Image 1 (cartoon, each protein chain N blue to C red):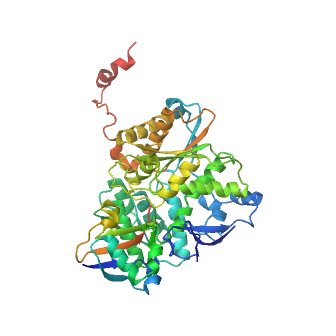
Image 2 (tube, rainbow over the protein chains, first blue to last red; image 1 turned 30 degrees about the vertical axis):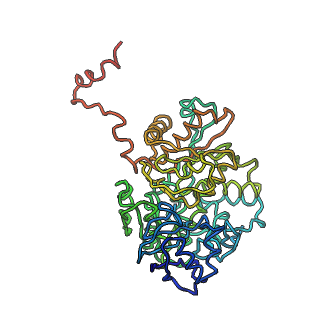
Image 3 (cartoon, rainbow over the protein chains, first blue to last red; image 1 turned 45 degrees about the vertical axis):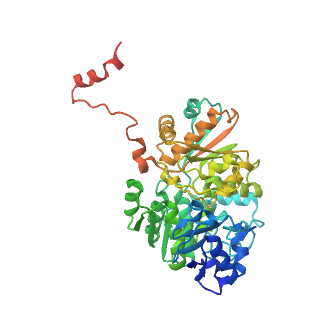
Length: 90
Length: 410
């Protein structure tokens, strides 16, 4: 399934400046694996011991995946996955 | 004291003093790092006491070289002894109320916004913006107006009417978003990537958060250069809670005050209690929640500084309590009846948490406790509706006597 992944400015050095990536995957975990396949540096920046780092938020079509099934959250064809720093607000 | 860099709280990576907020290596939050070495305690104290009657008297501890001009300076709000409140709670302890509703836009947010707007101007921004639960909206709109900057203020569209009115009046671009504060915050995080704006609590957050330290500094100064034994403070993002600790620590490190960190007691509303829940469960991170509470100014379901607030409460032997809507309303009444201070729902949360600590016997009689009241009751009037009755009479003595005969009998 084709999915658009939005990359925040803080991570664009690791994607050669790309703000959006098109990858395939049926769950958030699969999508992120596909992203790491293309841009190896991102794995360590976003994850730690196989899980998301504590200050990384991931949204599927605007909804935080922690309100869904985390990395197992299913993704529909054409959906948008957004990665953002969790350290804003308040 | 001089400001050195932005430093990641997680991995220690350093960055230049620009509009950055998240670490590129680990996404951790960036914080302002200072070099304290050239400042002596005596000299620092003298400079504070010779300073302005507001937060800029602490300019040596804020992220600027020199002291920025500020047409709407907040701070030096009253610290009041609340003996009747202590009595009602059955406490022998000294209870002090730091009434931070006494700021230009009636909440503690004036402190952080004053710092952020000054930094925005220094960095050359023409527009300031924020994601807000209400109080920040008031403050950003007002301080932008005072500084002659354009502003965009994003809030959940279902905010209290008083907070919307007290924002729009300043001529800001008020944007009501159909969603929760966390939705608004996500949107602003995305907008901060595309708009050349200073989002005070996104890309300027490291500077903005520093403003909260001034509440710690004032507390120490107003207590005669002594630390409280315990503080009770509301938690939304956890930024105020953790920066109070940092403020005390900076002055301890410099020798401006002696002793140790107070016990930190946090207060949340049950309807939005990610930090209190994580505290009770023993978690190191917070699980986000969908807020459902009358304490809208604290309705942040995904608190950015949650892990640090948890750590601070645990390290100091404190707690994080959650209180329900009825307790919040009772807290507002209790404070009003015993101190003459009318606070908003967030203050109700804080006073209700103080009541819980008192009930559990956690506060000892020799303690000195400071309770942070962060906002004004006139902004959340609905919370007091139907909590009392007005006596209606005709304009004649008989009518009055008929109503109040019992009270004047004998």
